[in-house]
Image 1 (cartoon, rainbow, N blue to C red):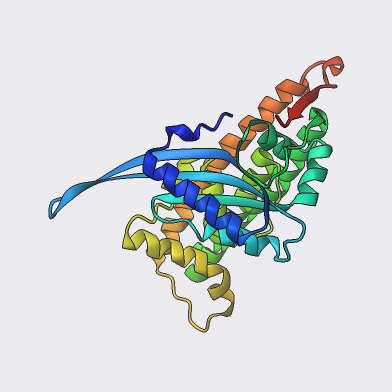
Image 2: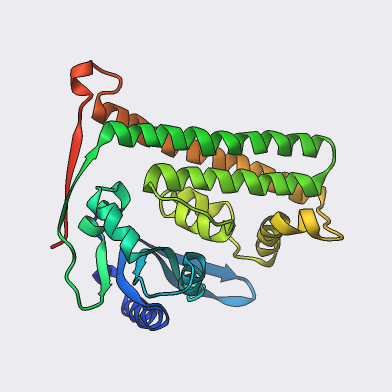
Length: 303
């Protein structure tokens, strides 16, 4: 994965530079990497207005903050994600420097991959550490299978509960169950494809991060019109409002629309993650002769 920032347009490069300056001023940053980059062009036409052309990009970032930073990881991540706008979007994974260096030393797949192949956007006056990590792919595969069964199966069970609520005409509870379905499925993607944890309930953040890995996810909740924004806000708000609000009303057509989109999401995630697991099985020889089952991956990091 080679991230080439020079392919961004001049205005986009300027926006990314401004983001780097702002976030490193707000957070005690040790390293800032870009490990995924999406660019898209949208053209809108309307019979009562001239056509408009919009260029936008989404950067997925790893922010490693210094150990003297006193704020929690969720607050730091929110600091970075709040700098997004309609044309320039930033999805940030944050972790303390001590934890990142420990994971790098032990050959963590995600950290090693980002340090070896991601684009370094910021480094605070220190060289990148040089590490030689050896990752046992059999152990890696076992972890992927375990996390996949845990999170995706739970998501499917929430989907069954959503179907029951729909049949019972309990549309508010159905939307809450759909929220849980999507959250668990997104956690499965983050675990299987990125090999990192996620302790947040921020559905917007998880969907954006997952859409960089499975692009069709972005089309399910576009939020490009008032109706779409209202539908997504209903889904996002159901996590709290369904349980605690005095009144939380959901129309039948809204509940069914979200349920159907969740079904498409599950199929897309299932196809992509099962493909990754099968690829790892072939690589390790897990479905072949025993003598091919001791595969190791050597990853060199740093410059």
